[in-house]
Length: 352
Image 1: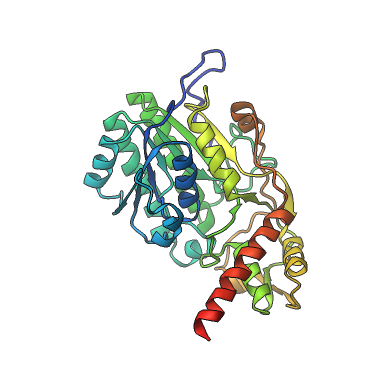
Image 2: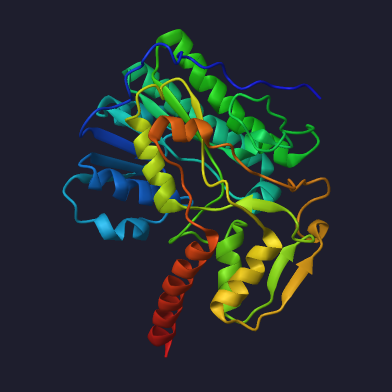
């Protein structure tokens, strides 16, 4: 299989490069009604920015913005940025774009692979073209999936190994990687100022388990007394970062000198096995739910690969912004247990 290299770094450490933005600005967040996007909106508003959310609500929810809905510096447009006129219009009025719009979830990828691959590449292509035409800097969120079965820990300038073309998961990885290459292609040809953030497993309030996200699924199963279903043996490991830390890192990258023209891993490097996570959730919820192992092939199509480990190197992120997400997963689980208990309790009261 051919080995693909990540895009070349557009700026040298010896030549300081101005950040994407300085001070309060007019900021667009595509996918701003989604799980991560809505938290980023709150962070940006807290920093004094005027924020324009653009979301087609295919996976996002307006309710995610309830805490800031009354803020005069927030504007919301329900539309798809795959429409060139929409993308052009929102970039024309912006000083900076955070591009988060896309299709996520391993379950969605398994069920609708063609749609997921095409949509993720197309939406990024449209936004990059509009940002380049308007000369507006952009921070593009990519995915840890681009590393595929590469060596651990994942380092931004290592070759990426998304997998064989017969494997569906590699198609998602390649769509995300191609979005990165398009970003740096625009940077090379038109001078577009771009930062790429590869997001690792991000968890927190408002995340649902609808599309295969493991932690919210475990929590809801445990709190409802249902079996906690672990796919495979559960030995596969992941690193879970709190969404509040992730969006703070994204906002910091937009103001970090020298970040322009570079790729950054954004997430935690604290490794936890999926089985250990299930056990932690059962312990912290006080649940009696059994932990049930479900063969991977019973859930996903044949040949759908689940990486054994996914651990980022955060050295580049720490050098750029001075810190990296480090909240222990146990603390994250405790916070989510409390919020979900309150949410489930409210639902029970409303239906009694």
